[in-house]
Amino acid sequence: MTAAADPAPERTPMLSVRSLHVRYGAAQALRGIDLDVYAGEVVTVIGGNGAGKSTTLKTVSGVSEMLKHVDGSITFLGKDIVRKPAYRIARMGMAHVPEGRRVFPDSSAEENLMLGAYRRKDSDIASDLEAVYARFPILAERRRQPAGLMSGGEQQMLAIGRGLMAKPTFLLLDEPSLGLAPLVVEQVFAAIRQLKAEGLTILLVEQLATKALAVADRAYILETGSVVMSGSATDLAHDPKVRAAYLGA
Amino acid sequence: MSDVTQIAVYTLTIGSIYGLVGFGYSLIFSTTRIVNFAQGTLVLVGGYLAWDLYAHAFHGDVALPIILILVVLLSALIGVLVDLVGVAPLGRFDPRTNVSWLVTTFGLGIVAEELVRRYISDSSQTLPGLVHSLPLFGSRRLPFGVAVSASDVLLVVVPIIVVVLLEVIQARTRLGRAFRAVAQDRQAASLMGINPTVMVMIAFALAGALAGLAGVLVAPRLNVRFNISVTLGVYGFIAAVIGGLGSTRGAMIGGYLIAFVEAFTGVWNPFSSGEVYKPIAVFIIFIAVLAVRPSGLFGKKIVEKV
Image (cartoon, each protein chain N blue to C red):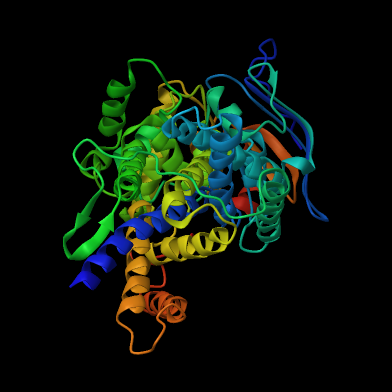
């Protein structure tokens, strides 16, 4: 319906996705997605189950097993990254906090965080570790505990903290609220708001559309692998169709 | 009482070789979730390479420890070759449903064995011990008339040093951290900027090096011959599984356990020839351990990922 309200037409986007197609066998998971994220923005991708939200994120970060079946272009920081392996894209400053947390279960919380900083060689790692503990005090309490024994909410914060330890310029969050109690969801979104205030660029995939639209600057709505609506988050939050379909109003 | 010493010596020497081979299985399993069935053959290849270098390339002019180092390096390369030819081309796959690795690794083992037969030797060979005497030891007899050579001492000590060293590397170094990350979650590790393909290659190189080392260390005791690829391959695998595939020290303990069972059966046996009953006893223990602890003595319970 509404075209993506380009917040700054003269700037080039940090991430630019053009006509992205992904096939899973015979099924078409993405049917030509166009998506831009500009520096400093929080952009959310919302939509129902199977709409292609996670596929979009996984294809961007290169972690998808279906990279061979990808068509279209993905440009990150001016470089073509489509079909590049995940570890190369991660080294460019993109941190992907995956769906289901994917913390390293046998490693302690601190080891998980240090793995986030695996590629860094600067001297700020120790102070960044303390900053993560300050942001998520529960992780400081659990620093010696195996991540696999932590609660879902703690694991989510650990996964976000691990992503931050890479000192990313771009953060991908895939369903950070999945399976969490309402109170914990609040904590996670408070953390996202905090990161936004600090100026971090974020692409957020979320089922909880109300929460996602509240924190985002712009949004894309996905249905069966296509962008059906996009625009400013506030506009979409007030759109009657969106409210009926996704916000339960 | 001499039986007791005999059993102890066999357990410690042969057991540590089973452990060394098993350790190779474990390293590869933890990063790829596949079992490298070429592992046993790589022991044989290591032995024959050492013999060939010693007898032909250098005509006995070069000290065996130098040959050992060369063989370990060559075996590491062969390990990488197994990965590049037999495993990496299979791509990212689910090892539980796609079992082509079973055919490729086993097949590469056969190819390697036939290459040795064709180009090095097709008969049993002997290789002298790495050292004739040790500073504190020398060749001597234990009480009750059990002969222990300097190479037997190496056979016991070197694998333990290697395993401790690899455990320290895993726990303390950056490489070890990356390795453990890949073993736990390959995809998540790649999101950390770790290249899983390289880590798997390192695992294959280490496993190859361990097999080569085992081949040279065991040569003074078992000679260089073809059927050790089956014995060491299978028993090394059992050692790794008993210890818990993926566990580092587990393979060592598993190796000692089955060597002990073998020695015990060979000595304390109501029947005339214990030799025949050794494998039976080993497999009974194997099944018994798995019945009680399906993921091995040191293995972690496999938790379904959500």
